[in-house]
Image 1 (tube, rainbow, N blue to C red):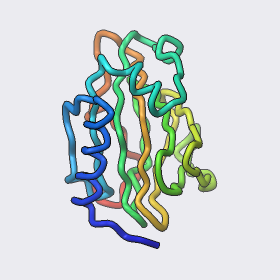
Image 2: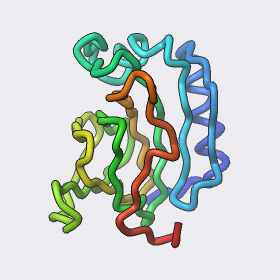
Image 3: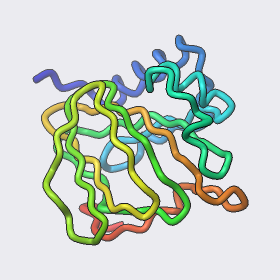
Image 4: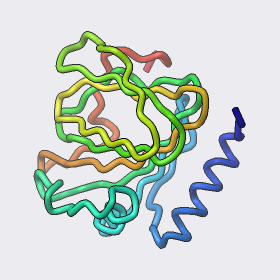
Length: 166
């Protein structure tokens, strides 16, 4: 296993996104589990072409707004066991092998292993948790907003359990 420093990985991913022509509108390296990059939403189709094999974003739209992101999860870290009131999500693993737990209830199901290229769709209200395994995981994510008048944001996270006490 090759372990890369968080700052170096973020710099590398930022360079890749820039080279691909994406405009990064926000990045957060302060999350205890890793962090993320937010891409300008006007580039949702370009993002889908690059990371979701040309998936037509018109098919993804629930309430007319999509938000593309890159998630980076550290080895051995877990995002909170969570769900959202105002969005569904679609993820594709870009790099690394990661774990995902999903459930329709607050009870966690078995860990699913996802490899590069694997896609998972998370419904609005579906409980989920991303888990870093032996290496850094990098995932492309598209938020599918379900309320056009009140789009989802980072505050639309209902944490059922969190390793970091948030």
